[in-house]
Structure formats: structure tokens, C-alpha cells
Image (cartoon, rainbow, N blue to C red; front, top):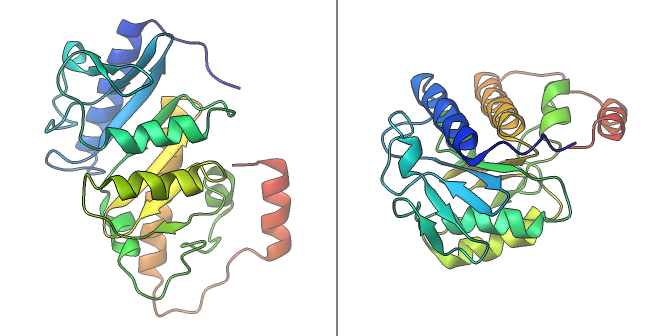
Amino acid sequence: MTSPMLSESARREEICRLAKSMFDRGLTHGSTGNISAKLDDGWLLTPTGSSLGTLDPARLSKLDWQGNLISGDKPSKENFLHLAMYEERANTNIGAVIHLHSTHSVAVSVLDDVDPDDVLPPITAYYVMRIGSLPLLPYFAPGDMQLADAVRRFAGTHHALLLANHGPVVAGSSLSAAADATEELEETAKLFLLLQGKRIRTLTAEQVTALRAKHPA
């Protein structure tokens, strides 16, 4: 169920609080990463070149559904990733999108022996519940519109995507849901890397099917 729509000022504050929390905990660095959330009359996005640790709520970019800037600073150059997710998942209860360059997720995205159809194995129940399956999209240079086309091919059936040599893009019904899924992905990527070279016991196919039936991602 989608959370009740907050006022625009409350949504701006919510984005900035979440962004600073993620920055302070090392989930993003420098001026990387971007966060967006829906409004009644458009959507908010973090500005280009901004640090998620020092955002000003009044300067967030406000856009319409054609991607035009309504107010605020110039939007992130990766705004098309967010717009593609919103458009392709319009029939779901999508309310927010988070894109990070989080270390462990990026590390997994550069491994050459992962399954591009589903990058991470079902190590934990919460990963299955919050992510489901995770396709790996091919590498494109930042700002390349071919990346938007690639996102569109997968976004209708997956709310979480991993961009090769780049990072995750995750949609959720709310900012908190998108953040929970993004952080679950990052922690699972960390576990996956820690377990490299070791024999591991993943959830069985039956266990995964049961979890996905009860908790569709």
C-alpha cells in the first residue's frame, strides 16, 4: 500500500534526512547518488553535483512528468533513470527511487562470473523479500541515454536493478521502502563478497518460491 502523500515541504525534509543518513553511514560518498520522490503535481530529485550529506530542502529539483524542471536547482544528470522507473512502474504503487554508488553493490557489479539475470544468490530471507531477483544491466557511460532504454526493458518486472560498473537503482512504494531495499541489497552484496571462495548454503528453490509468493517484491 502506498503511504499517504505528504505535503511538498514534508517530502523535501524527508528526502534530505534520508540522504544525510545514507551519506553519514557511508552508503554514498562525494557528490554521488541521487534520490527522488513523487508529489501530487510532479516529483522531487536531488540536484546535480550535490552531496547527499548537505542537501538544502528548498533547493531540491522539482520536475514534471516530461522531465522538465519546474523549480529548484538543475536536477541530477541521471534524472532519466528515475523517470524511466516511474514510467515503467506506473501500474505499481511506486513512490520513490534511490540510485547509489554504494561500495559493495558496485564491487559485485564488476565481477565477471555473476549471473546477469539474477546477480546475487538467495543468501537471506530478507534479501528475497525486499529485492526478489536482481538483473545486471550492461555498462553505459554516465548520461548515456542508452542506459535509460536498458532500464526501461527491465523496470516493468523488477523494482531493483544493478548497473554494471556503476551501482543500484531501486524503486519503492515510499522513501523508507526504497531505502530498506537499497540497504538490504548493499548488505547482501557485502555478505556475498565476504563469502567468496567459501562453500555456502543458500536458501533452496522451494524456500525462495514460498517467500516470493508471500512477499512479492
